[in-house]
Image 1: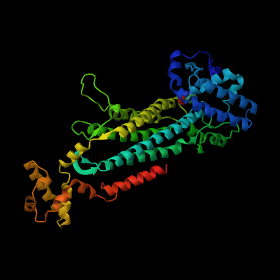
Image 2: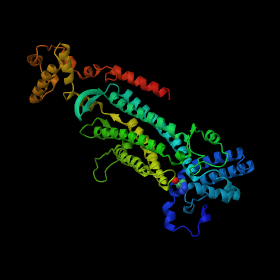
Image 3: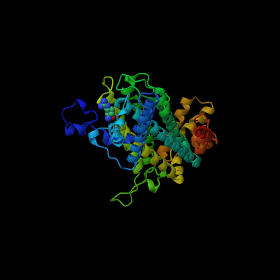
Amino acid sequence: MKLWGGRFTKPTNELVELYTASIPFDQRLAAQDIRGSLAHVQMLGACGIIPQADAETIAAGLLQVQKKLEQGELQFSIAHEDVHMNVEKHLIDLIGPVGGKLHTGRSRNDQVALDMHLYLKEEVEEIVGVLYRLVEVLTDKAEEYLDVIIPGYTHLQRAQPVLLAHHLLAYVGMFRRDIERYEDAYKRIDMMPLGSGALAGTTFPIDRDLVAQELGFSRLYENSMDAVSDRDFILEFLAASSILMMHLSRFCEELVLWSSTEFSFIELDDAYCTGSSIMPQKKNPDVAELVRGKTGRVYGNLIGLLTVLKGLPLAYNKDLQEDKEGMFDTVDTLKTGLVLFAGMIETLQVRRANVERAVKADFSNATDLADYLVRKGLPFRNAHEVIGKLVLQCIEQGCYLLDLTLEQYQAASELFEADLFAALDIRNVVNARNSKGGTGTESVKIQLAHVREWLGTK
Ligand code: ARG
């Protein structure tokens, strides 16, 4: 017998039952569903909508259902469609018809919205916690290798050398914004829809503020139709998650490149790599590749829900049941991915000798030589031309700027003096950039201090 069976004369078609049921996936919301019901029934008792004694019986029954669920003593059934009706059915089985009073002044429409808000609040808090940890790990790495200079790229061509710490702190900046995005989305996840009924409110003298307070919500939805049909808060979570995955994916791409033989800038820890079934020499950066790859499903979950929602008339529509699996998948993908990613960063080693060799074998100090001529009074555009020609000369000779003689330099411009070689030194090149936000060691130390300060306030 269905909980809503009264107006039906036939049993549900079996395939329809399977097709419409959400219990296979929404059982993940059982704890939130019971928490919501406890707050609801407590309010029903306090407001005199049902007798206090019944409210207490129902609350005790709900706790019993929860305990039995945790101990694996209760089964969910497709016949009861979703987590809400499965819980209610178990409650009534346990305490009898009085359990039927729980759903007074409530609908599954505001109930499911409540469960989703409760669930996402918890998960976002946890994800933000892991993100803080990631920022910490990155900051530690940056500090550990504060003296290491790597090539900086534009167009994936050597551009100007930078501190590795500077490069890592660029990602810290992205992850800090990701945290801000989640914290901002949280304000709208932290809104209570319960008490909206099916769509129009309820005839009972409920106290929504009491329930919100009990469940720890900062505010209520002001409009019952909005409350039961809003899924923006999930979209915002999925959007923030998509941007975060995009950041992780870019970073992963660099880790894959950096750990290749061609770059050899880093060594990923064996514990975070896998081998090949045929090529004995292989050590593959699978974790980095998979985080990069899983970005696709996280984007997909966002686009999927956006598409479900477009064109939906108010208020509740069964389509909304499609909000769950993608959200769960994004939560799972992110939580596992972030923990693995942080571990991979924490354990990676920088191959100092290779990086040092790499950073000397290019023309990434050319801008500094142009700046040198500018300091001697030449307009930058002319300086650019002079150095460009010198670079060409080097390429023809098969050498780098530091290999040319003072005579060769002076033949190109009489402004050159012996101090040009200091301007070309890679460490001087980096440390000459102490402008705010620049890669000079002093500037990077300030960035590090600011991140530490920010972490300290969290
Ligand atoms: N399982 C449903 C969902 O996830 C719960 C709400 C059902 N409401 C309804 N009127 N059929 O959306």
